[in-house]
Amino acid sequence: MLSRPIPAVGVVVEDLDDDVCLYRSDIDEVLVLNQSAGDIWRLADGDRSVEAIATRLADVYGTDEATVRTDVQAVVADLLARGYLVEQPAP
Amino acid sequence: MTTRLGAGLITLRVLGTDVAVRADVAEQFADLPRSDARPTAVVTDEAPATALAELTRLAVEHSPLLCIHAGVVSGPDGLIAIPGQSGLGKTTLVAALVRAGFGYVSDEALAVDRADGQVTAFPRPLALAADVWALIGPGIGAAPPDGAERLVAPALVGWVAPDGGRVRDIVLAERARRSDGPAHIEPAARGDAVPALLERAFNHYRDPEGSFRAVVGMVREARVWRASYAQAPDLAERLAGLLGVQSAAATEAR
Image (tube, rainbow over all chains, first blue to last red; front, side, top):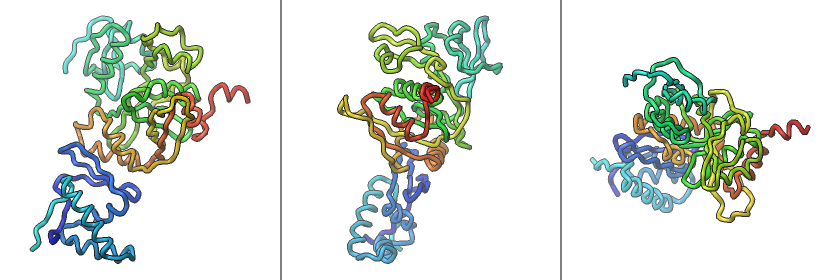
């Protein structure tokens, strides 16, 4: 996955303890991300690819990058499908 | 809305707005403050029980506050909100909590100022069904016939809390599958309370983003609990013990 995920326009974000609360007013839906999913969300800034997010988190967590990459891909795919993230084309 | 008041109407301050009701009906709503302001709406129903429903609907419709379907009581540290879900028996639970020593704030709506998180009380009468009499105990008048409800003044059930306050505890309650099991309560993640509250908002559509931020801000200040119960007085006693509330009877006995 070479694209660079970025928050969709209109998603409202609030931190709550270690969680991240997202709200889409267009469909009136709340999504609460736990700490690890929240870390992925915070790094999905449109500048980083999924690979770069996984590399960064593996470094922070001190864990195997391949394992982290699988988790990042799953979370990003879910957030893309739900419309909280959109894909920014690679330059 | 411009309203010409006729004789025999009294305006009540409800959920941050002003609603007029017939004077004889208003007598049933003695715990709701009177207002001299021009009403935003007028209750036309004359039967107290259905007038109460219309009053609530109109107040929510015109309220500038974020109104969430929830029972609310007052404890030593602040307000306790219990978001209502279908079949929860919210009014019965609130009545049991007031009997256990909590202050009555509302059996229907958590009304929050989106800007500062301050809660406005809505101490409307409790519409209690006949089977609640055995749970709540004496002193609330005669029970209605089976299958019917009767409006009970909050002061007959217990202490009516003064207006205002902030939410310090949120209880996500559900009925237990077993009817004879004990009530259970445990800490829960704050994040669990955000969808539970926002999904039960009556009027968040007026300012969706502001309402979301208000709910998160409220949850940020609160402890969140998950509870299951079969009998409302059982959960009420457990919450009273957990939050340091003593019933009037217990206080007198000491």
